[in-house]
Image (tube, rainbow, N blue to C red):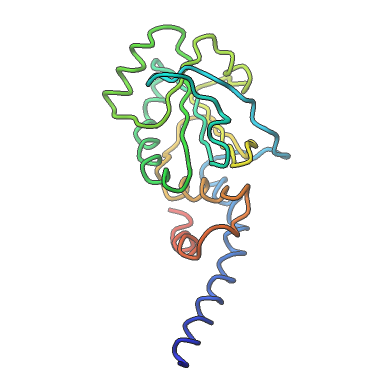
Length: 200
């Protein structure tokens, strides 16, 4: 009986110790990944684009989920460098309501986009913005550029340049956006896991 009480008290103390650590760790995770957070979080511009797998996809389809919106092109070497790590990230975090939407700004050759996605077995959402209207909405100047959008549809940060998206720092940075920035909804298991692996 005493052992059970001690274990429950220990678990509670561990949870209380980890929670404030993770709340304050968020800026450190962003800094580690080179993610720039806006001074005030504003709603992300909505969009509706053709999905290379068929039909159309819009940002509102992912309400309540964390979304990594990545702007890229098939002629961009740096974009290609990060695609494999994005696929790994998607495979690992999809079950945690994290979605990846890669928007190609190639003006032509949609077949080339499909060919690249098939060859590299990319299973996340790939959209085509041939008129570059969405690119202009997001003020994209260089490629690749990515935006982190929380479950409330607000922009929480952006990244210019390629990143290793399947790193622990990257995964933790995305998971820290659960609940619109509050970590209260994360389980003790996730918190303890990230406490041990906050930074690579």
